[in-house]
Length: 270
Image (cartoon, rainbow, N blue to C red; front, side, top):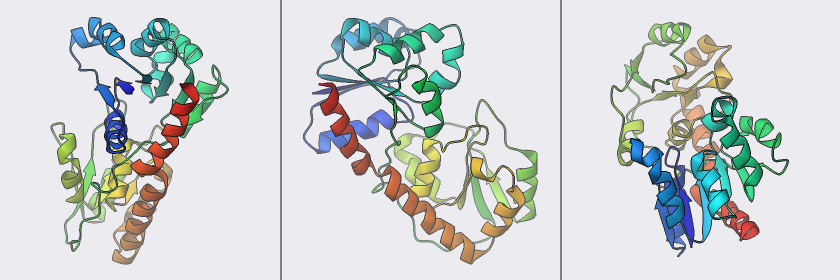
């Protein structure tokens, strides 16, 4: 029995789906955004939990799991270790890191912070369902579509917007949240995906775009927007980058491979 408390970008959901496909009984308890879910609901979910506890975010859920249940796996995702740890509730984050049976982090840049409190913290790649997020066969036609999801902590660089326009790309910025079930189809109608730049790690949506064979413009290209955009305008370069993106997702983030490793981690904390 595995209980997954809270979630981030459907990471817990993908883990739950893969575990269930292997015959595990999984209690998936994501948080909602209302006041109850952030307060009393956290306690209720911790009390409902059974078996191995996999807690997402080093926040109240993790703190209560440690105090009320004892053994648990802490899965840090980003905002907890980048911002919350230095804020008003930083003591909750720090305590959660210290009392967890095991700590894993979703992106490599979080390791240094995690290891200040847990020397045994490990990087654990975000899982992607590479059988659902798949490349779609289609001819690239002009205008070429570029997808950008606004981030609350940064905006699209003006230089990049100019280079995209110059190269004939058309920018698409969704006004509403896209349902997760619709995400593979939504991503696949675009030719490029623009990720965040201020954080030196791929977002999960960026990896999902890669799995769809969509080249990305991300933190690696901050110093050379013009070069990246102009190269991707060429069909031969685009085709090569599309394959590299898909191969990267398959090698590093395939849900089955990632959960293989997670099962071994669970065995350590039973």
